[in-house]
Each structure stands twice: as structure tokens, then as C-alpha cells.
Image 1 (tube, rainbow, N blue to C red):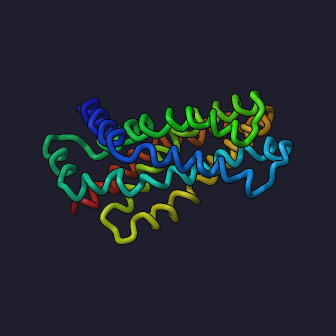
Image 2: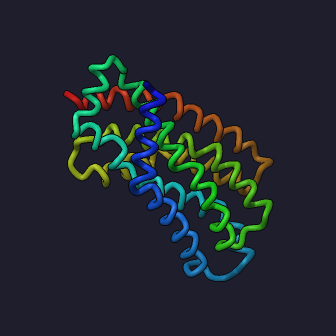
Length: 212
């Protein structure tokens, strides 16, 4: 059943607006050289961190559509009647959201690095941090989407919740992308794993509360 849920959410994401975060990510990467200037050394130094900021802000775009449509249509109630716990539903949503967001973002990072003039070594480090960090980012997006489901101005509230909670992930990921010897990659992996494990429980409790 969880596999069917993942496939359903993935089809819905890919058939809807899954490209919007990727387009936004590339637009930010394209605009940065206009903002900081064409200095190649400066862009190479700040590029990995800027790519992570672009990824984090791009992750905000789909938050309002991750849980609320299922709550409003009664789909969550139907899943509960079939005996599924909301934690299982949340886990399926995390996996589906990451599949529609993480791998496309990794692919978009390649042309994004070209726009920022990143050397191959910096691009490789950035791709590694994105591969490790995006599951945590997807889990956090599902948790925030569950907490704001059914609320007025959920999109704005989602941003206010997601951005502060993602700061540890952003700090360690940007540090690991810039200096692989600092041990930040291990800390980023720990934060991402904590979010992946903990977010389904938070999201499950929030979805149960949103149904009542």
C-alpha cells in the first residue's frame, strides 16, 4: 500500500508543477552573477553556498501542495479507514517528494554550476552535499506541510517554519561543499538522517490533528 501511495504522489508531482522548484533554482543561479559581479574567483568561492540557498528556497515552493489537497479531499480519511497510520502516509509522502525533488535538483545543479563558474571539484562536493541533504530537506517539507495544512496563509507560514528549521542543514552542507576537511559532511548527514527519521512522526501527528 505504501508503494502505491508513493507511486500516486510521484505521478501527481511529476504531472503537476514538479519543474517549478527546478526552474526557480536555475533562475537564482543565473541571477547571482548579476548581483555579485562577474568575478570568477568570488563566484567559485561563494557558489556552493549560493547553490544551497537556492535549493532551500526552491524547496519552499511545493509545500502548500504536499498535504493540503489530500486533507481537503478526504483522501487522508480514506487511508485511515483502510488501517494506514498517518506516520506511514507521511513516510510515503517523504519518499515521493524526494523522488520528485532531489534527483532533478542534482541534475539542475550541473548547469547551475556552469552559470556560477564552479570548478569540477567544487561541483562534485556540492553534488555530494545535495545528495545527502535533500532527503532531510524533503522530510522537513512534508512535516511543515502537515503542520500548516488547513491553515490560512499556509504558504507564508510554511516558509516561516521551514527556513529556520533548515538552518543546521544549510550550515553544515555549505561548509562541507566549501571545505571537505572540516567534518561538516558527517554533521550534515547526521542532521539529514535525524530529519528523515523524525519528520514522519511529526507529520503523522499533525495530519491526525488536521483531520479532526
